[in-house]
View (cartoon, rainbow, N blue to C red):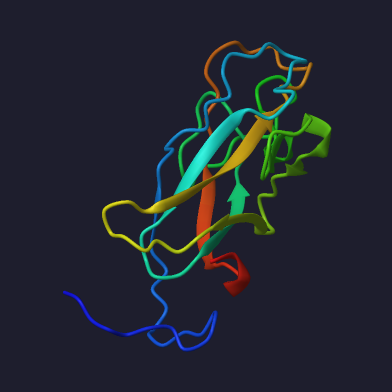
Length: 161
């Protein structure tokens, strides 16, 4: 469909906001790390695509990671086989691990990812968050560690659309 409608003022919303997104990264690719190692700088990314009619940011929370993780069944607190959620950090660019924001399991934290609103349905706009993890030196259980991070899309500031 085509039309002649135009935006009367910058940032004005003339239709209902439609918060829609696609998280294009299903697993954060931290890579293989040994106890005591960390991603430094942050290089693993998650990519969010705006598929609605507004610009987006995202809130995140996350769980601890362990070899036997299952959603709804948190990892037991263990210095030798659990990586606490706050060992995962995020940022909006490639920065040093120490400059990242630690993930929380209880308090949603906004990532100012600033995905502009898409203007074509065939090519949604995207933006990425950068992630890193520190494997505590006390970990002695070898294997794959899994957990769950939750992304909740929120409307971005009009100036970033």
